[in-house]
Picture 1 (cartoon, rainbow, N blue to C red):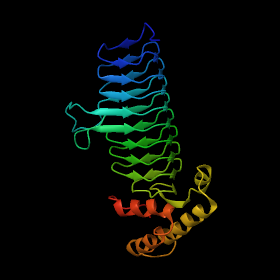
Picture 2 (cartoon, rainbow, N blue to C red):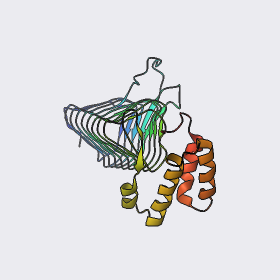
Picture 3 (cartoon, rainbow, N blue to C red):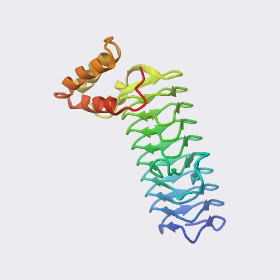
Picture 4 (spheres, rainbow, N blue to C red):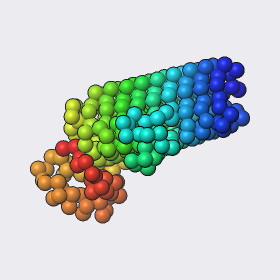
Length: 256
């Protein structure tokens, strides 16, 4: 299943049914799980662990050194889960010792062509990064996030679950769950209601999330006062709890 023109290190651990295309280079310290397909001309360096049933297209570069001037060759890692699709010219770098020494991508994600995941990022599950979307270092992306083409996220920023980042948006502050943001710098636009419908949220739950959005962004309340109102609501409406918890944990302040 390995093309004879591929270069695979004897220190790599490759499951028996993995397919590796011509001229691909697999370095030492790389582990690739069963059912994964790696196209031609890809480069995967270690330490990198890749799970099962992934599809990695031509010219992708995974697990190389972080683009960080402070990096001095320390042993850091990249971990990729299962069933991800990683398209042409995607770049994903390992972590640095200035964080957890780990870049991590979950399961069932689609990284379209030319996307970039920088060092120490954590990407959840079922995320879509459209063409040329870019994450700076230390970014955290929640489950079910969709990033439009050419969008970018500043270093150390967090994006909550179910968010929609519009094309060309420049995200410089944390984005609470469920929110759609647009612009440069990105600002809140509305609730990602269509995405929530597709993921099984009920009409009542979406209505509650819209009310929470209005409290935060349309009521004129100071953030602390809005948060107190939302905390009361979250006692009875479970879907508001992630919204409240995210805001309380924000370290860069939230988009406003």
